[in-house]
Length: 146
Image 1 (spheres, rainbow, N blue to C red):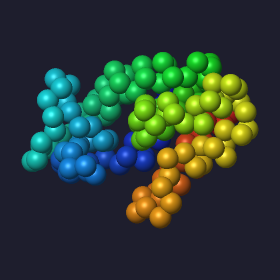
Image 2: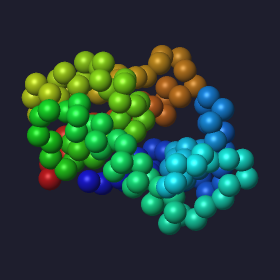
Image 3: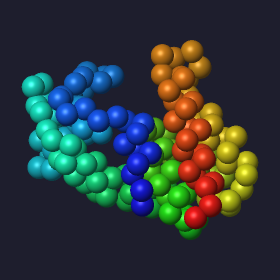
Image 4: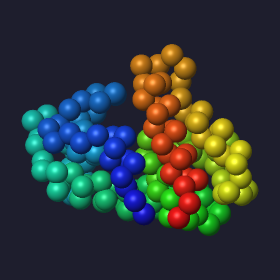
């Protein structure tokens, strides 16, 4: 499991900032610490702690959710790409996506690429360009040979 795409897409912030929804966030998109206390204004962490928080969030939250949703066997690149996607859109959005149906039916189906590129992108939103770039990198990782 490789978290590089999540790290690249999320970016590293060592000082707490407010993201959409007025939620304090730090590191690679963490909203809480190891003890489940919330990130708050003025918090500062190291790059090492940001990495630790990301790994914890993925291992405790996103990987178990992904394993519940994806029934087909995935290779390492497919798993890493799917983790980046679920980290960005959440389990609820993945659960109701056409992409999940395609992946579960055949994780090597080339139709996955077209569906991936449009998953959870709101046309005309301020994030559209960045999300299109992220989806392109994710799907390239998904289909990258081992």
